[in-house]
Length: 250
Image 1: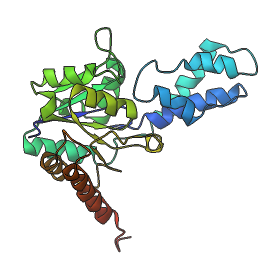
Image 2 (image 1 turned 60 degrees about the vertical axis):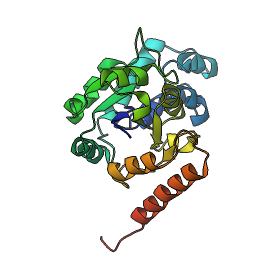
Image 3 (image 1 turned 135 degrees about the horizontal axis):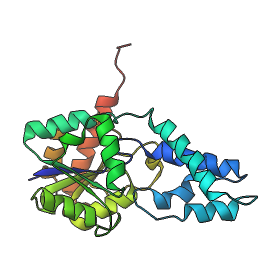
Image 4 (image 1 turned 45 degrees about the vertical axis):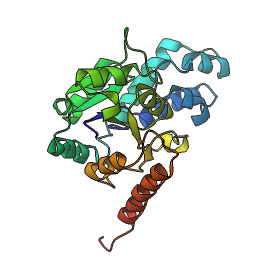
């Protein structure tokens, strides 16, 4: 049985991925060079996966004033972030978890201050029983540390929890910690390989939490390539396709 839900934060609850990536892209553009998704993949869902400043200095056509670049980049990032709000389906899943009596936590590779600030802005901070971020004692994903700490904080065995993730690094961390994992990509991570998740949904808005958890409970998650596991995932995907069919509403 699934007894708890552990959410990632960046790109999953709030789409910070596009604003952060776009601000870095514009910084590279301003120095006459480019930054691609293929470059950026190493940094998605983790911390310090890419020496981004070193890459900019290597590719720039002239010297880089690092302090001035960061000042402009952060201002642009914050401008773009201000236009973002909670991703579709997140609030409904939080409500659903509450109705089911399931504790909900966050496991993030971002610093405490970053996650708390955005949760406060979204009015969601008090919806989580624990908020675990990487730091001096907890390694960033794909290490399992934040997921293990989140499960410990809410007193749930990892095997009894499900992680909700948007990135390959995040899925790897959840699986290493022993959690089952549902991948819900954003516009950037939809281009990446999330096949090691137990299940992939295009949006949390398309299927209620109860349906997904019931299906995960009914499948053989310990053997994700088993016939039962494949049948379970096909059933969920069929539900998603049905829910995504256009209606006559305008």
